[in-house]
Image 1 (spheres, rainbow, N blue to C red):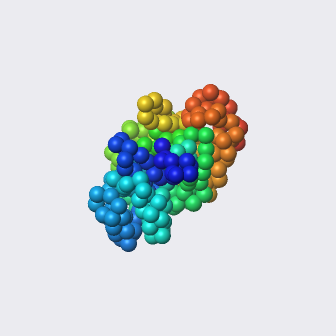
Image 2: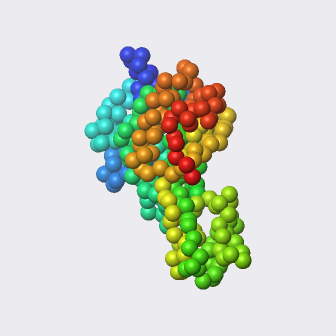
Image 3: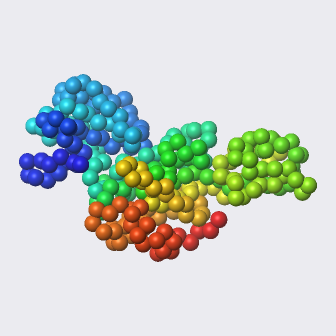
Length: 286
């Protein structure tokens, strides 16, 4: 919860410590990336106003603890002057978590770009309750997309051309979920088992396996904490542009249909997943 200032308004990004005498200043670190000058400024602020150290949050943010209440405004202003963003508290769109899928060998989508686009459009937007977005670049799911209110997962759908296949079985060895098998008709993919990770495509030496479709899968209604709920998958794969536009529609729907302080997943459960998906116009098909 954000701390109240002298005008009784909450200061975004300022949190009261347990002792009630000191404050924590929380910073949004865009996609978990920060440059050297900003790191130095955060260090300087921690030395000047706190106790010389910072903490890392589970959502790729940085917190400066042990800031006296009467120094908060000055510290925040210095941070803002350095181009740093203070926030990610309260009933808002929180810091967006993104894995390193942009540069990761397993990445199937530009997670960092999607994160920047979503942050630019929606970070800090007021909503009925906190709203968390998580982005992962592949089904390895390092940032746990399904445990966010809205999750995106990079995926690619493989297709096979058996006339190019030499039946080396490299794809079978590469598939960790055993979705590929050799049959009398050649190599076949069990679509009900395939998680669209693309590992088989990377290992195919002849090009018999290639990408049929690629984009971001979408999960709605997840959460983690005292109560947890796994987000449910919506059919289809979305481009970055489509994902940004879809997020806007989801947030508008949330603001218009949620009860006061109701989490997004609770609203989805109350209204019905299929009903919400239909009203959002998510007509993509697998």
